[in-house]
Structure formats: structure tokens, C-alpha cells
Image (cartoon, rainbow, N blue to C red):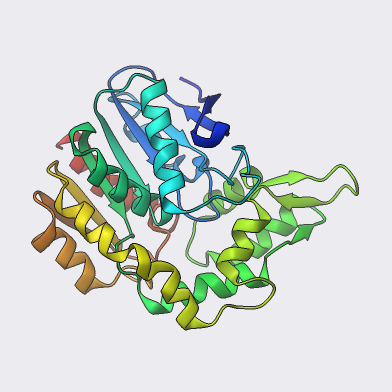
Length: 292
């Protein structure tokens, strides 16, 4: 079926955009990472949409979902959104796939609602993030805290530098679905909430590395504890060239902490695994969720 956009109420009265790709089977909820949106999964979804009821969410402050008026973008706010969506749709059990920010939200949701998870895929995300990647992301956010463009094509050129390994089709989709026309002056701007970008970027200048680490440290232990509580089969997907998920942390998650953990390392991919090497990513995840 063709994807259908539907609005669903999250926490705090926010209207969230949910892209529904199929309607039969066990629900599969896809959660994107920081600065992305639901269509980041477009290369993957056709491989599973005939087997699962696939739902891709725009997280609050991203894509076509509402911005929070007081910039409530803490992990617990996102978890509350997932709880609201699951309850609204009457879902008893589901598979969750989360990348980066979405992966951390999925961990916390799973730790609080282990009975809801039929399966979990965590894509290049962890309780502990590699220092190299957090600094890179904060610097990129600071440099692009409130950008505007003369055209979608101009935004594409910026994305080429931010995602050097991504396929051209992925770059084109990110530019198309991640930007909108500003009526006042006819320029294109990002759909992501400016307050969210500035928070990650430390305002108008790059945040101090120690401050960046502190942003993540508070949630680190709660995420490790959450992973211990997740009983379902769980796949950790790591990009071989990732600067966010280290090999050591990925091994610890899969081998020591998760009850039923597996690890798949995708070659020729960095942090944005699904856009850098879609074929290998699809193969690894479909093998897990379809048992092939």
C-alpha cells in the first residue's frame, strides 16, 4: 500500500505525524534519530511491510509533528509520546526499531514496558556514546542552528557534507521531507524545532565537549538498567565506521546485558547505517525480524 500520513495525539496534547505503511500483522514502530524524520526508513520499509503493520513516527519537534511550546524534548517526553501512541492504537505487543535518538527512546520504553515488546532493534545507539560522535553532532547543530536555503537542492548540498557516505536517493529524501517553504520570504527552512537544534548545539556556538557529555551522562545508568529489563530478542546494529557506537559498548550490550542480544556490524556504513549501506542494513534487520 502507499504510505498514509495520519495525525495521532502524543503526550502534552501534541499532534504527532505517523506514517502508516501497512495495516496487517504485528505492529512495527520505527523511531528515527536526531534531525531526521519518518522517511529515513523508506529504503527499509518495503522489505517488511508485507509481514508487519509498519508505522514510522515523526518524533516531537521533527518532521510534520508538533513542536513543543516549552521545548520539552527530554527522553522521558518522547517515551510518554510512545506510550500515548501505543494506547491510542490499542497495541498489545509490538516490534520497535530505533536509530540513534530513537534507539535510546526505544531502550527506555522497553525497560518500562518489557511486556509490550515482541522484538527490538537498536540501530547505532547505546547508553554510552562515543565522545567523537557527540562532539561532531553538537558542532554540526551549532553551525546549522537556524539555516535557510534558496531551494531544496541547496539543502541537499549541505546534507551531502553532513552525510558523506549516504546514497543520493537518501540525501534527496532527507532534503525533501526535512524542509518546508517559509511563506514570508520564499526561502526553505528545516522542519525541526530550532530550540531542539540550539539545545544540542549549545546555542549559537559549539558546546563545550564536557557539557555535551553531561547531557548524556544523566541518562546513562537508567538506559543500562532498562536494557537489563528487556527480555525479548534484541538486535544491535552498528555501522562499522560509526563514531557514535563503539565496538566495545556494542559487544557489552549484546553479550553481557541483554537477555537475548545479537550484534550485526554493517560494513561501509557510519552512524547513519540505513542511508550509508541500505542493502546490507536491510539484510541484517530482515534476517532478524523475519527469521530468514
